[in-house]
Length: 361
Image (cartoon, rainbow, N blue to C red; front, side):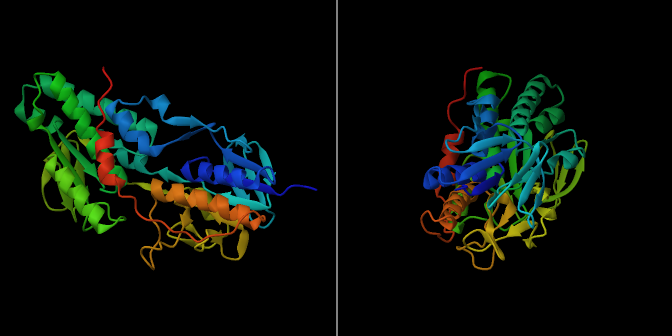
């Protein structure tokens, strides 16, 4: 008897979790193929530790070695939902079940051309460049004779106060403090960190209590947390915020600027906010053979009726596990469950994790 074919598109957090759970549930009862451009998966929650130097860039990627799963190296170019086929640059895969977990892509690169001082915070390369950029700015500040130039190089602005922005400002400040402690020409009291968020509060996709706690912790560290504030103008000497202040700086960190992988726009499936519309079991309405999870899925948020679950690593983790379990259930292994997720109270606690002792230079 031919085993059912399951194809998973994407080897990020959601895709790998889906593959693990599915393989464990079916125990050889299905052929599982995971298509990903690289043979590793990157853990985005470890990017702050690349900034601080606790981890090297080669230490945040985990090889895609998944028992019971065939990893196919390739980039998916098209999904033919009618013919139930996945086309990638190395061939074609037919499926009986499909899990779309292609993740998101960064739009920081084109934005960053506005300013040579711009740094993204979405990939390992971004985190490594942020570390190098901050180190260089402080080295130049230590040698500066012009007080205005020195102050600008000691001023850092992070745009976007979601999970990534909170991580970026915390890790960056920890790195800067460590550098100042080693260089007697620098004084950490000179350093200014600004975290600007257009919404009414930071971590707008998480619970209010968590937002308040994190804001309080950041302010206690000396971070200027500015809500209902965004970017108005970028110049060669800094940026102007919508509250009217011009901030002279040589470092602008963009923690936003991601969107669902454009692959999902050509599937012929219903979409919402650029993401594949799914029900609370992560199945595509009218296409029960297709599930979607992570950043490409428009998942109803059970904690906020009428809204979608945010594009975050925590949600991708839980959705991936659920998608794997629910696809297994559709094949006769276990039962299907709706998506439930509680915002983890660890974001404020992770601030301490991001501040782990820095690796000796």
